Image (tube, rainbow, N blue to C red; front, side):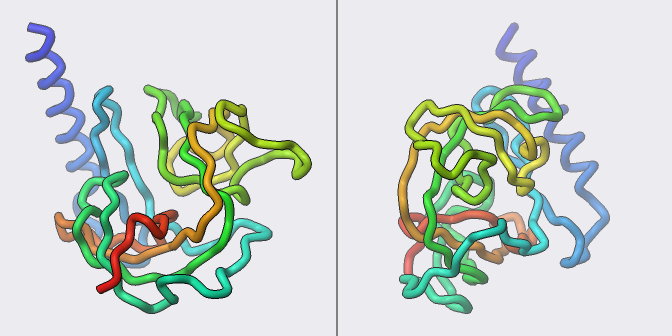
Length: 186
């Protein structure tokens, strides 16, 4: 009975999301995708306008230069795994997976991939480690801006902003962020 109720709720949430998504094919508008997490929450992604956080520096010698086409092997958004992407930016920074509860309410987003150092509201002298609490200054996900997050993982690496067409055919522009290990040279 519970399983049937849960499946009905998930189906209704998907239907509402799909209905709300229809009718706007403009590439300049905020495109989005939805990923349904195990906890039943809707994970919505909005393409960004390409604005970069203050202080973010372009990578000097990225493995995948701007303009190159790569194959994505990332599954943090539905429809992104196994599709081609175009690199629109490459940046050397510290990358975090974080858990946070959206300011818009709902269930926590667990191990959200990815937030970069320049998207955290912290004192630069503050040493960050796993389980540190931080405030997010990122808006690439609804309800992320201003949310308190717990750091799950920390790595220094090159991150990429990409344009891609999802496996469902939806165009996503300026997706933030994909790591080097999630990309394969074409």
